[in-house]
Length: 154
Image (cartoon, rainbow, N blue to C red):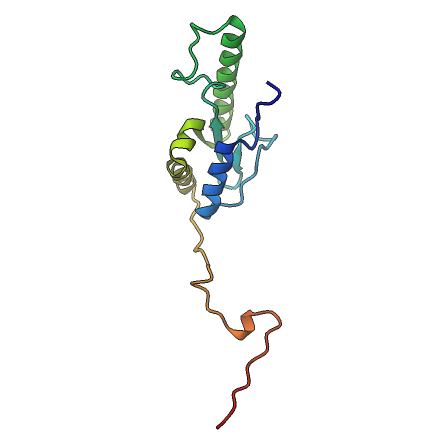
């Protein structure tokens, strides 16, 4: 189990890439001060995002307690109990919790990012207009070290 990552998993990174592409920046990662140490925490908007592994958090299609040993039944039950306790603590502190499964991110990262953006929007976040090279006017003053071009009078 030492090889199993708890942070910066591929599904988590995919969510973060999608959030950055949508302009939702300013989040913190794995904050110890926030109950449950969310994978992504928007502290200003009080939105916590968890990307849960289907097996480790007991999704019914990926974990069958009847077939598991007592060790695994207890371990997964503790994980789920800890998830519920973190959700309750966050809700009590005024946070919005977005939980998604790792397989949801693999199937459609855009759908998961949309859920997070909806939660952020409900909390008051508005996306900033994106400035790209195509939308930004380029002038001589905008280029560092550029000198105006002298035109020759004919």
